[in-house]
Image (cartoon, rainbow, N blue to C red; front, side, top):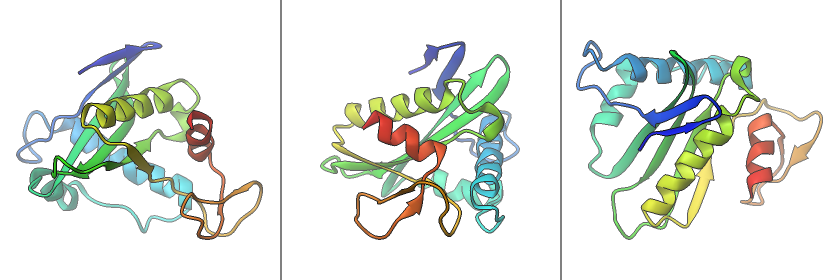
Length: 166
């Protein structure tokens, strides 16, 4: 399903059979976006992954379903989201990772990608979504308590969006 909203096109990401496949452009962009976002949000490059490291987990969906979505404004990819869930049809939860680099935030991509992931969860009868939100270590500014009840973390623009959406 493709969604058009606020001059954004939200579409499924093709998982290429190989990294040099003609359809691999979106996959490479998603990996790059993840690495940029990890560095922006944490100040570290420890979370960086290469496309070579990442592709096998996308190709083997025996136990987990992993879907990607890309947000485009014109020809530019401005955001991405990953939806993970168990391949068990009885599963009730899913995880999401919404990735929009700072330069593209506040223009609607975050919310459009979040809504696409929520729609996928509903289509798959998942009742609970857990979002992965990066943050810097230590705290300054507003702190939030995770739903798990364990500790506190610094609020981020993405955690603010998720809180606002309920």
